[in-house]
Length: 249
Image (cartoon, rainbow, N blue to C red; front, side, top):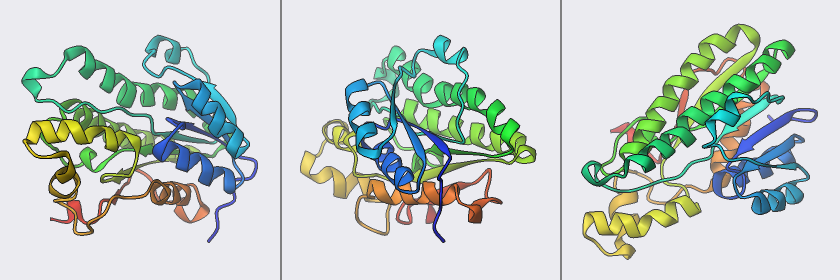
């Protein structure tokens, strides 16, 4: 079943690269008017031009600004994220706060901003790009794991509140995706685990997966699109794993 998003407006955060860019491209092909939100305005503009959408340069760590925001969209994809790999006793508190602000507080504020319009129209789709780390923990990722676990809870509450108004809210939980965010982790992972960088993908990133490969951003985007389809109208409050079997054991 194809998904036609013609006439729908979709806001995608972190749209300048990786999963966000793939979602923007996939949703645009489905007919959506895509707003490509990213702190990197130049790259957001480039993606917007490629998909025939609009760029929104926004610093999602500016929570005061987001608290005053009114956002009109039919679909919200909370995707923006960063990563830091370090043991808790060495983890910079300011960095911890930034990660939680960007990956939990900002999605809350964007959801808060978009829900009134969705309620008025009787339709809305909120797709939270969580992670396998929203369901499982890994050492040296205290901030990321904390933020993603919180996002899972936020998504479920949004589902309960939004259901009577035609709004669904779900999480996607991929394992390691072939993105710049993952590539930047390799050196840190090698240092923390005492192995060579060339060994990180096989010995750290794929060790828990039955399917031994990285996920492609387009695969995540396709699942996000399905969650916006009529076939998924009864899917809400769910967490969809795409982890090659990581969470099966």
